[in-house]
Image (cartoon, rainbow, N blue to C red):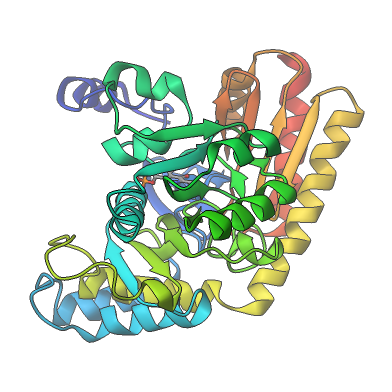
Length: 392
Ligand SMILES: Cc1ncc(COP(=O)(O)O)c(C=O)c1O
């Protein structure tokens, strides 16, 4: 657990934008995290899907150590091999076109938005996104994020963004038109509690983007890199986007984000249009290459499907027994809704049992374990839920 002195120092020194759980970690290995007393916690959050390879994966650690000893960063004024190799890997495993690098998910959204706006030109400045979608918290990304509670204090936002409910086919058809430069969506909306966007909605978005000359941008920042089973969630839907955003587990825990597009958009962004001092440093790119080698493995992806199906079956058992009202999951991206608004208490009770999960709303508990987690740890998570939920 956490010592009170550290909590007080944090409160005095750090802007309070997070409600932290009362625990401080000093070491991690795979799906295990350890506090200063050596107590083990089963990580079922993976840093909000940032640690898909698990904590301190040996390949990532070695890559970071070796690269850090050689060269950490030189900015983007010069060529570095790891950055080029990472761009090639992303390009060849996804949309086939060039890659833009940044440092986070929100920055990836911003870059995709600028690419779409520049491609669209002056007559195509509007963007359509989904209610409950999440694309980050910088101004452009926040404007696309379809959650008024997160936007309210920061208005006016970037103009021209229209939000449509994730299952509103008619609304989508009405919202997209000749002035639309892009449609942004996630295949599964993670931040609101793992809600898959209906396949018909994603297919319609593809069709409307083609009809009106807009770009379909799929945000795979949370769903990507094998989280839902396939390397990218769009691959299970049968819809190929024009642009994809990546971040989170791309760097195996080290900050890095990327935007990749189909070759048609290779030349939209030109020197001076966009940039980042830090992006795709040799250090971050080396970590990302190691992380991608692990997550690109077909056997790992298959194991995510198998473990995810078992976890979802366990969660559905909770629904059958009246402990939860709904269970949702795609691969190892899962959530349950509780009968009452006790999700924060459930997170607290699970922490006491040694399991890390989070609540995305007063009634919803989300689970995003590292993809290398053992089936036994997932069984134990369901067992812990069975113990704590009846008392809430
Ligand atoms: C789908 C999605 N897009 C964008 C972001 C923003 O990423 P970051 O926190 O790295 O800016 C997140 C973060 O949770 C996300 O889940």
